[in-house]
Image 1: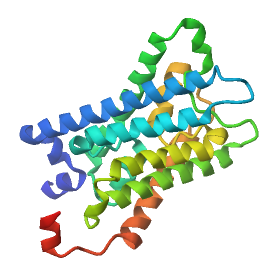
Image 2 (image 1 turned 135 degrees about the vertical axis):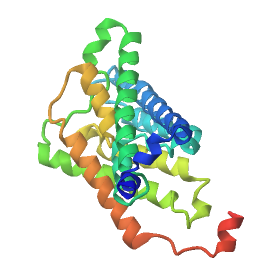
Image 3 (image 1 turned 90 degrees about the vertical axis):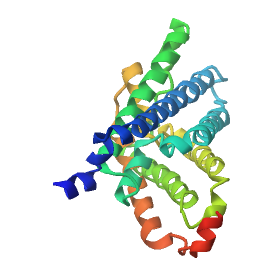
Length: 253
């Protein structure tokens, strides 16, 4: 039974001493997703008022990239700053987080995104609520399977970057990690926002969907990024990891 609890990570949430650290991590994940939806979806609302033929996709891309950069920089030491069920699923697939903790992360990520979108809606004039409040939707010329493909590769590139900068045998990448992750998010938005809205993040879309009441093709925004994230994590873990550093190098870093 003890081994079973250790594999699932039940021991991480059953000890009062450890739970204090877990609660801090859950709070960090909640806050990160709150800020992501509040500022990121806010930029989408602003874009809705651009000239009809000149939507400001760069504004949205850099806003999402910057808010992720800021949150990873501020909260990474507390929870690892997953901020995304696709990242959490990827880390779970290679054993970097236990199952129970991963489930708790995903729950609070969704709650944080929901709270961020709800707060955004509460602060906006009522006649702005019909903008969709930052909801991600498929382009009318893109079908659900194609949308899945785009979201798969969005989750893939994000988790590939996360895996690379968090590799313990690449200490030189640690300082640039938050910026690299933020730029990966900006890249994903610039490359695919006109196809799927470039979610990359199931929690981000879930929060928007609840508040906007739009659930069209919602599965795409869960299955796509999570599948891509798991594949990227497995490829990096089994084929691309940096060679193990000598113990002296690890101590120095």
